[in-house]
Each structure stands twice: as C-alpha cells, then as structure tokens.
Image (cartoon, rainbow, N blue to C red; front, side, top):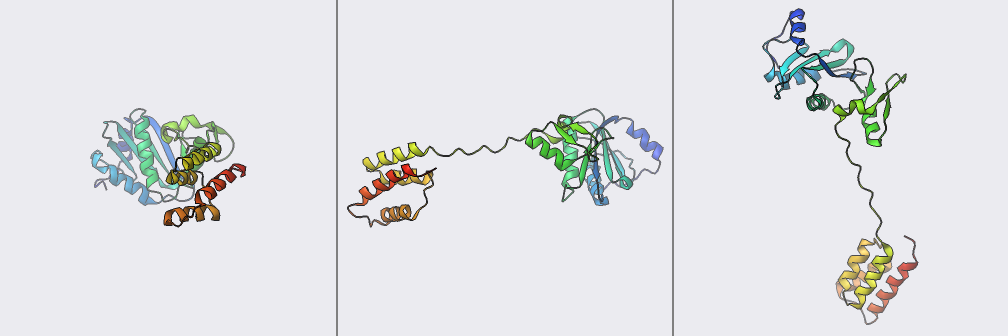
Length: 231
C-alpha cells in the first residue's frame, strides 16, 4: 500500500491534470468492497508519485504513460484516466480490477461517464456478434465496437466438429478386411463411433484371440449392415 496520503484535494486535482483522457469507469451495482481499490493501490503503488490521496492514486505505468485512478465509494465506482488514449493499458487496468472480484454479475462499465452497460452483457454481445448492447436502464443501446478496446479481440468460437464420412469409412473398413488388416478395421469403426454389443463382441474376439473360422465373414457382414443404419 502507498505509505503517504494526500490530504489536500486541490493538490490532488492538480496532479490529475496530466491525465485528461477518460479511459473507463467500473461500477458495482450492489456493493464495492474497499479491499478492491486497496489491492489496486498496492499493486501499482510502487510506480506512484510521492503523494497519495486516501481513495486515489497517480502513477506512471511501465510504458511511461501517466495514470490516475480514483475510487468513489459512495457511488460504488472506480474511474480511470490516462495521459493519452491507450487501449492496451486500459484493458490491463480493467482486467486487474475485474480480477479482484469473485463475481462479475453485478459489474457495469462506462466509457463516456454517462451510460452504463453490464459487463457480462457486453461480453455476451461480443461473443454472439451483436452490434448493439442495452444500457442498464434499457433507455438506449450502445455500439459494442465502442468497448472493443476494453474487451480485446473477439475469440474465435470452437469449431463445429464435422461428422465423419460414414460411407467412406465403411468402404475403407471393407477394403481393410480384404487386405487382412483387422486392426485398421477397428481403428476406422472406432472413428465412426460404433457402439453396440455385436461390435464389442467382434472386437473382443479379435483382441483376445478367440475368433473362429467364420470370424472374417461375420465381421464383413456386420460392417456391411452399417450401410443401412442412420447416421
């Protein structure tokens, strides 16, 4: 924690003049624990100036950008200003603050000091590719792109797993039988996700070495029967 507090708010405002760019404000709609901002001050206190205010900190980021952050407990919000616009630093500071919260359900964000949106709603809107997001009072909508500098790049959705080509696999399995490559047969059918008692029995016979003379014929008939099954 910073070990020196600034009691003169006029001096505090003077220090803030060097950080005129409003980056963002974070609001907790229910309760903002003092420990949140105390931890923030502790993390960045080493880079702070010699003067501190009880609920504010002015420090030089490692990128040499000046940062001012203030916690307004009565309003349950934390405001952050920068020397100049910097998306990377803004995102870093926001993520730091978010990390102090166990739950983000009640957190809101503002980039204009007037309109607020739920952080969870904003993340969801970006994930779903929506262009607009409702403000918390539902009186207006804002452009999701205006928050992208805080959200970061949109993560690519998990690719949709394509079903295996059933006809191709069955054909290759029958060819593997003719080539006497039984292990290849089961490798192909496992990829096809064949789950049945008949299949398990055929596989166990091969693994245990208990197959009879008709084994190959029975395996061939079983594979051929898969052609008539639905995917």
